[in-house]
Image 1 (cartoon, rainbow, N blue to C red):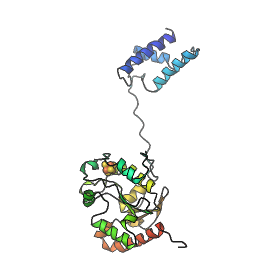
Image 2: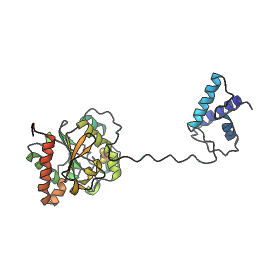
Image 3: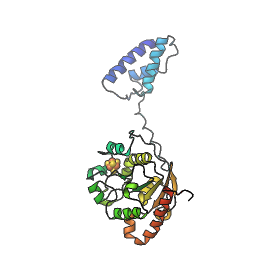
Image 4: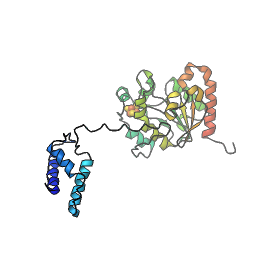
Length: 282
Ligand code: SF4
């Protein structure tokens, strides 16, 4: 049979299968269509006319595109996605929010992870849109979930007091958490919940563009620096995350349980203030 007739028959059969919604074909090599496919692709050397080459190339492209598979075996499993390099800021498919308010509205009804089902309020973050300091905790607790504001429970009162002791108010700084919905029983957020919420945190950082990020406790430290040793070793030691300088310190709820650590944490807060608000000539 002439190759042009093979092409025409093949195109007609493929078009018919596509109309039926067929995504791929698993053909035994001795089936008629399989024989035709192997005869018609690659493009026959005899194709000389421009129109004929075009049709043959189109058909080859359809075949390469996975419209049909000429094999007795199922198609191979897709390759696993490359492992994410967690030491770098993730590339975020930004929704194009131009401000934190827009971003908050964009994610106001977020259902991207299981935490959505148990929340009363999504706790996006609060504070000054141009703050030099951004505090990042791990997730909202019961009080925060009720009020929709970060750090408003006992730990929040301690954080507020330390901010005020620096001569600032909560309205001068920006406070948020790694996850925006309350983990049940105040447990730590799970890796898949952190990953689901990561685009929001990343966009918050980019929009705020603070001079200094202060991570509170182990969870946000490990999000921004996965290979960090742990908060007890890392606190008070700055590191870079993308374009931003980060200072890890203890979570206020840890300070409530270990009041001896408050003095150490206070040193970190004073360092944070100096880094975020450098004095001329200082
Ligand atoms: S925790 Fe984050 S990702 Fe999960 S539902 Fe809440 S806002 Fe969405």
